[in-house]
Length: 95
Image (cartoon, rainbow, N blue to C red; front, side):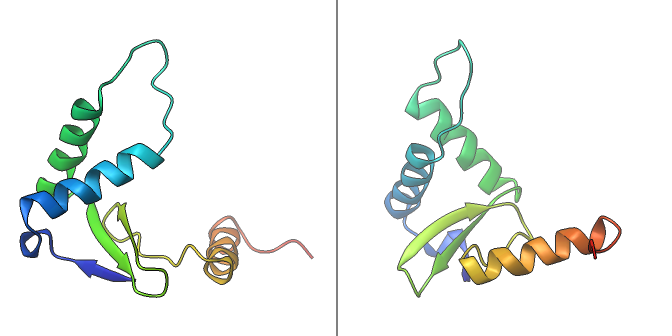
C-alpha cells in the first residue's frame, strides 16, 4: 500500500476517490437519509483535517481511505497478521 498525499491529486481526482469510497462503504445511517453530497463532504472534511488518508494498492490498482496509521494489508495474509496482532493485544493466544 502506498499513501497518496492528497495535495498531489486534482480536485476532480480526489472527488472521484471519495465518491468511490462512499458508494462502497455500506454504512447504515438508520432512519435518516444522507445524500451522497453530505457523505462526500464529511469524508473530505476528515481528509482535510488529517483524520483520514488516501491509500493506493499497486497490486490491485485500487484506492482506499483509511484512518491515519491504518496501513495494514487487508489481503488474506494481511488479515491473518492483523488477527495475530489483535490476539497479542488481548492477552495472548489460546493454546
